Length: 103
Image (tube, rainbow, N blue to C red; front, side, top):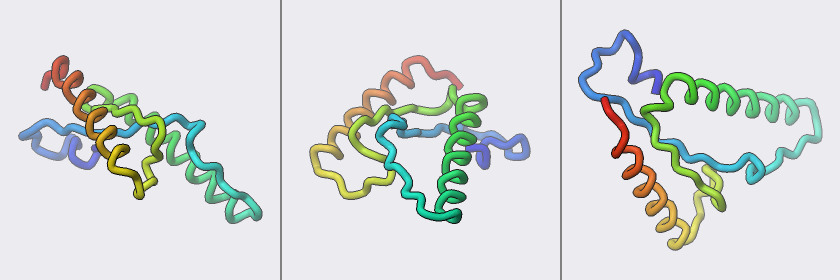
């Protein structure tokens, strides 16, 4: 969102974001067998922490947060029922968001 919500960009329209929130207990564990895999896992952890911190501070008021429980954001092969559940959750969260959002 920072790319489109920069002070250098003329703001014609609001910038909205959508973030799928999942429980960190659902996240797949990294397999670490050497220093390179450990570095990768540390980098991934730092990136996620940075993203969560940045989002929560500056753009939280312009993001629709959609809680997901049984699906990871990197899980692309999901059933039709899971797709429908995600769409329903997204619709419900967007509806709540737009009731209180102002630009």
